[in-house]
Length: 429
Image 1: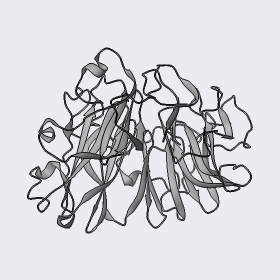
Image 2: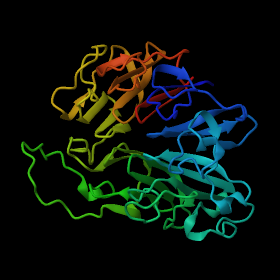
Image 3: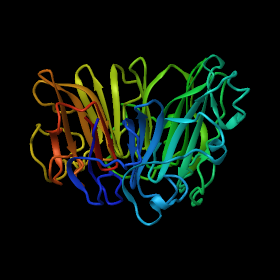
Image 4: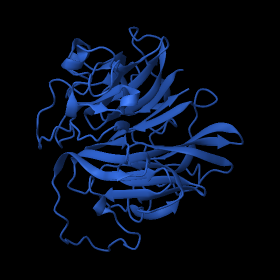
């Protein structure tokens, strides 16, 4: 299955064989040392990308591309010392202790600005907990599964995004380290997400799902009490009312106590959105662009996505969007309506995305300031995209913004998976 990419590539993070931006979906390059297999998950940040790669012969490895200036791709090595390598290569973010143990394989990935996160897991021969031997720094599943998990972070730590409790300006990691979590009996990690300055992990246990978060927290990113009710209207002036006192950064803390199962979590630059299995939503954090206003308690939602300053949802009526619209990110213009110019205003309350005729939407992915909708037209797979396009990340052959949805052409009938990152779009076909 070929992997295609387009968008920002100054650090070779798209693995295209060069360091120039690409304006159309282009095949990525795999180093000859990578065994046969295919990508099953992918995340991309400002200067690096990570991919979970399933080997044809069985098992999973971690691939990386881009720069390693902060150790986000592991300890400095010859592969990245001279210059970024513009192709996918195997990387190892296990701790030195884990490298002396058998069976660890990557299972989940996430990336902040210049920080990487990986959940490794292995199957134990004896009861989990007895043989894990790592206590507070491992994520142990229920004994019946006999599986051990470990959450690893590596890279920069300007906003305590490594999850080690350190404050601002802490130096990058010399080696990957485990993130210590306060775990309940039988808990395991089911979902890992990160964005520019904060990260979260969902822990599923016997009493329900907990949400643990760390990193930047001054703007309420890790505080559900900062939700904005629908009755709150945008202010006409800036004002300087007293904001709740919150720490600038936080180590791993419990953001949500045990509750119903969490289907998905999406993060903006300074806001957090949670979708529960029953289709309800909770959101908290910054609301200066209207990105979380009225989301708490919203029902009937099937999928969510978030740009830096916007939030999107899929329900039975189509797709809604709210927040920043400075580059047409809310996709409210007629489909195919051309590019150029910023969206009118700058912020907007929740509104419906204007969809092309006969387009049946099945999924949403969002990058920093652009969106890709997955679905079908008359039974044929189709992708539509819009928003900010400074680096060609919309894949339409130019760098003009699109205020409404335009068709994103792929080299084959349709992608089997799609991802969006920092000014980048990826498609597995």
